[in-house]
Length: 210
Image (cartoon, rainbow, N blue to C red; front, side, top):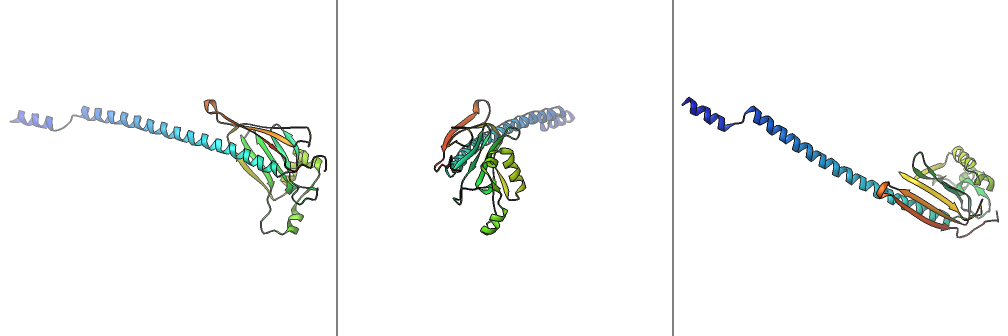
């Protein structure tokens, strides 16, 4: 009777070794499943990041075309950006609010747009008092323009794109005589690197008239 009890108890449960083995197998399965889930999540996130980068690159080109098409002059073009002037009140005089600076920073990998944005509630008189008079020479100089933007409290900087691998702008002529510019932006890395190129032109040029 005693021997039979031992047999029944043995068949009704697991030994400590068997329990530990089962736990080890379960842990391995859980770790493997977790690794697969993590890998899938990383892959999906990478795809989302790449898709967003491509959308941002397209957005940069759209903004460039919009800004250039509305402008009357491109005071300066260099490898990493350009300065655009739109004579908003048709007075043939330069003011800071009429200038837009689009440039690329290799250190931050961002393409940004800098311009003045006045409060919507301001009157024309308030805007005129807060605007900064400029000249063509000052508008063509990046450092002078950056200083003017820094000193004016209504300057806003918009990030057009992040994680940009390369961005370049070239003009059709030297100095402020560019009526056509070509731009190139590259995002992504390795096999998923994507480069977008576009050309844009002034619609109403004031080259040689200001």
